Image (cartoon, rainbow, N blue to C red):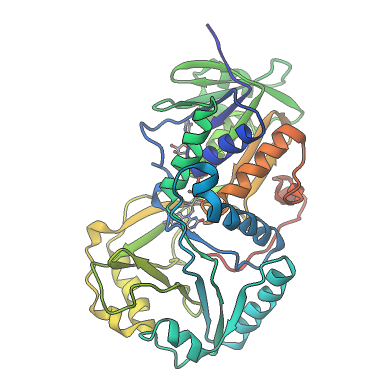
Length: 412
Ligand SMILES: Cc1cc2nc3c(=O)[nH]c(=O)nc-3n(C[C@H](O)[C@H](O)[C@H](O)COP(=O)(O)OP(=O)(O)OC[C@H]3O[C@@H](n4cnc5c(N)ncnc54)[C@H](O)[C@@H]3O)c2cc1C
């Protein structure tokens, strides 16, 4: 018997789980989520730092954060599962006038969009948050109390458990190997994908509109008219299965936890040193250190590079001299993949030329914090064709061909 679903979601990370939850919120429950791993959270979601912030520079990111952070603050009550939202704040520290002016301009936009609790702070006020910070070159910064952290795994589980309670099915250990587009196609893309044999490599871009009619999986064929690509860093491969182009590239990101460290307060905000991009927060008894290595190149690299420890500790000790004494066990450090787009903004919405295929991809380091908003927007687009939360056309994949790129410079 052919399996049938109204919507098939490919990928059960935090984004696919949020889409499933938000579909059920609006009564759409004949949904099948397909995950190739034996457990949820093996992709980027399980590697995340869990940071959430409204301190962005573009309107669309601020709007998505505003909705999402409010959602996280009510998550336990609404979803019935803990998000472990901790409103410890994000503290941006500027060491030059250009960065300070950037923060001032951002704050004006954030305030205008309803995020009214972003405060300008002086070097002295910054030192009061974290007395161990070297502040002699810090000329000011911004602090937003409702920024903070969540537990990505718990949020993902909460979304999925609630969705399943309402009838959503989750197939684990099942890979999607092809996407069938309707037979009125030219060329071989859909046929080869649907036959299950030729797979990803043989797919090519379709020139005219086609419609999806199902997915091939390692458990057999599933008939559906709506497919959501929530495949994280692997999203471009999934898009190719339907002959669609999606500019999402994987980029390795590495995090280093210290051993228990008492040389910093028990509670303090995420601190961002804008001069180097180094940022850190407390994680249990230790400190979680993060830095975006500009020499990193795109690719599916998920091994942790031990030489990164020295690079990050140099930045850490420069800003917090006492961190030079922190112990680090490289075996506890880890690497994961950001899903990058050319303008560092998500791609959300229907695929041009492939009717019934929806993207919710390319979060460029913000997929956890924007998961509530992206789930809602995707559900709205599938069920109503538009969303009241934002003008979703801004995030359409069309923007790259049309030269309408968005610009966010604060990528962490
Ligand atoms: C080190 C690091 C730190 C980060 N820190 C933050 C942060 O502080 N804040 C923040 O908001 N974001 C952060 N991010 C980014 C965030 O983790 C991602 O944007 C987010 O997890 C993306 O979720 P996802 O569900 O789209 O992808 P994923 O979690 O990768 O899920 C995709 C799923 O699709 C499955 N899949 C792929 N292909 C197939 C297929 N063919 N068939 C079936 N299943 C398939 C995969 O197995 C996977 O489970 C960080 C990322 C990393 C790596």
